[in-house]
Amino acid sequence: MTVIPENELEFRFFRSGGPGGQNVNKVSTSVQLRFDAANSPSLTDSVRERLLKLAGSRATLNGEILITAVRYRTQERNRADAIERLQGLVDEASIKPVYRVPTRPTRASKERRLEGKAKRSTIKNARGKPRLTD
Image 1 (cartoon, helix red, strand yellow):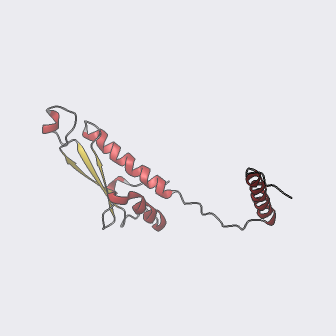
Image 2 (cartoon, helix red, strand yellow; image 1 turned 90 degrees about the vertical axis):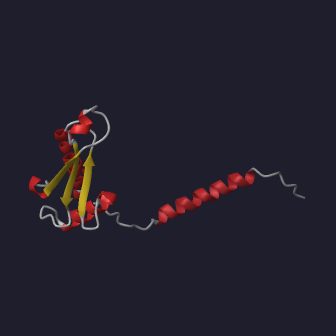
């Protein structure tokens, strides 16, 4: 698990809509977290590549990841939510994918498959109209 130091994170705060009454018009509770994944010394190259791919539209062309948190009514909770979501992305990117090693079917499995097809064929042929034989 890769941990991102807080000095690599940049926060911007702004006013948001949603619940909160008059508080919404006065207090900057929404948080935009900006993380420069392309230049981060905390990430290995493979994790960085997977992270930018996972981030999708949240990643800019410069390799920065933007996460906007507006879920809660307080700045502190939105800030924590943004950090948690980034950490979730980093944790997911830290998991190395398991590659499937392609194998060839055995002779026995080929024979079982062909026997099953032949059996099914005889069952279906038996469903037809009875044929008159001389």
